[in-house]
Image 1: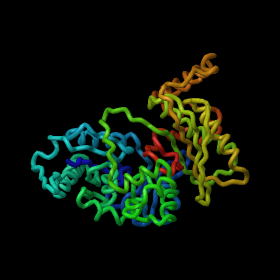
Image 2: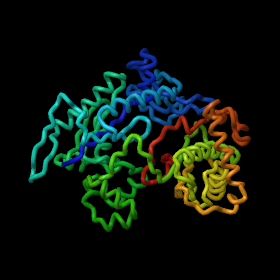
Image 3: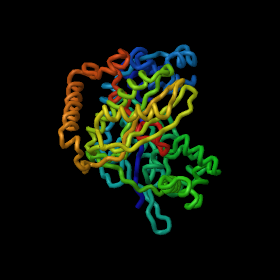
Image 4: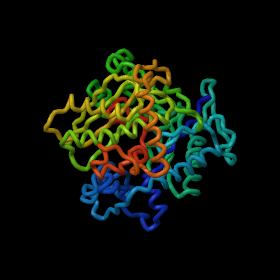
Length: 436
């Protein structure tokens, strides 16, 4: 029997929560933006009304106001966003304990075995070739039911994709926005999916899309029918995953709500309102990013990392990424130093940098051999200091304790990227730094 996987995506989430907090914003173009001094005035989220004027995430405030003169700019309220996100998951938990988060505003739910889902609606099956399938009517009702519960109780809308695997469920949730349900079943999947562009597939970023386009694979259907050897030679192991996704063969399970997540990489990135043109500023910004990466690495419980990745985007929107193997570490100071060394090696003045990303990978899960530094206690002492910093910041606020290199720039003192960049895993291109 096919699985019932739902992907739920809260619509314009930050802006929707702002409207709950301030009902006068209803029906008006809204942009949630960071503070001009502390977060450089970047658009973090926008309402449907602002989106219609071309306002995009990552625009500066002045760009958003130029596109939409009537846009209402509001600051972010991350504790409130987290509170609503938890409330949404509590609704889902009534029906299943198989709930896997995909960022603050998206979740997968596995409702296949749940007997608590829809007491007012009988499960409808039909048989084709001796195999049982759920009817599209029943699957649509599931998505509508979930959407209705969230909207009625919390006042925010959600788009749902319902399918037999996670990839197609995610694909479906993007098809009817805002506040809609799309079904991609085993029997109707080809008619829904095959004509869609390949970049609609989960984790397919710009570089992967461009390469697939150059090979003649512009739609998911074309990719699904491609020769396996051709795709594997072009993309390596990622090619196998691309083919499985395009063919609807993804069988990865939805994790339990309390199940520990295994990370392949952990990172963060930031876009700046103005181009950065000097090494000293770059070093400060890399320390801010490394602070968030190191703290997340300590929290995830997967030990130390042996690879540091740097992603750079210039003011002209061209970008590149590089990486290097390092001694196993979870220290901010070492991660930042490696990232800065990579930057200096690969970027020479004059330069104009608009975005930076730092990522670590190659986790040892606690199995690294003890190094000389660790034996002498140096590493352990530095690790203890950084853990102490984590606790102080949790209790008193991020800006209360800062490194000297960061404190030199007052704008960066409160730039708590870890708790304000609530991100999703990155794509196959592995350039955004947004993994973890």
